[in-house]
Length: 445
Figure (cartoon, rainbow, N blue to C red):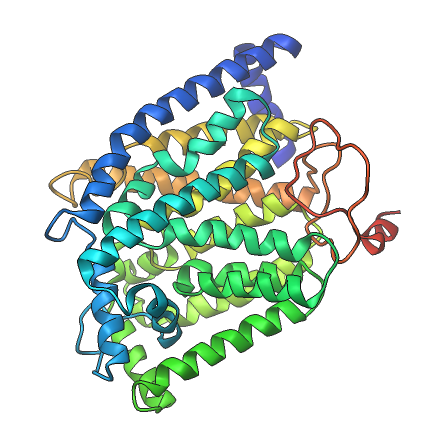
């Protein structure tokens, strides 16, 4: 069965439920409003305990990862050995240089309070960006979009442990919007490169997005600035560990090789480990990352949100991640929302179905919520969520390669330095991407 016929089959199944025309629009608005209310209740249930754990709770459930980063940063810049000495230390040197302004001068209790405040600010900023850029209109749509980052099991875990996911997603989106909009210049490129460099504090969560920064702006300056900034941060950090870059890299490699990929779920690293091919994990990750860069280059004209979503799911499936890194799926859900809202063909119906499936899993308790992390129920959940992610990944790739456009004024992600056109924006057009460049317009003609 072809993908087009599959979309038609899904449409045939869903049309009796949705109806046609105004009736379908009303039902969708009511469904989104109900979803927003459910997410509001879930947010109010999950966030207060999460922030309590982050700020006050002792033990492993309370800011465990943040406390580990504080110890690592303090030891690093005190010249003490970190790799092989502190069991949790598996971040590259530049990450500690990026974390020092936030954690290097604080004790753990103060760092917990500061991290809670910054997490809350980042969530508010991310919701504002998503509502503005998604094309959501009306209370139901905007409420649904705004609450997505707040309501999921991964978001709660990110808050509770003091992880960086809530900081990285809005920085990634903001950096791309800066680089793809308006007239190109040193100030805009420097700002976008600086924002993206901050996301490299956790490279395995942000590295694949570097291909978007490299290929979509159609100029080398942003990527070159990011590489230069990251190299400078690495050199600065290594200077506090004796200045031996190769020795530090060797110690990091030895430490990273001891990280248990079995702790994650739904990724290629775990699959290779389960097949007894643990020595292939790093080579496979590098080959996949390079291959994905070629794919992004080939489809760099596609819709920005589709490319963001495919990159997010690739990142989640590509290498070992724990459940808190499932926050990446927010980008995929936003893209599915846009396809369901703005799609001009049968792709709207499978997009709506996949959005509903991802949303339901996002609001579930998540993996490892039971007292036995190896319970049958947890294994079933991990299997189901991996299947849904793979289906979403394949569908979004199909949308990219089929040339799906999202809205009457949808533009390609590859806009460069064209000035923003004046005049009123089409009522259904989101403000998520830059205007189409003259060069891209001539190609399409």
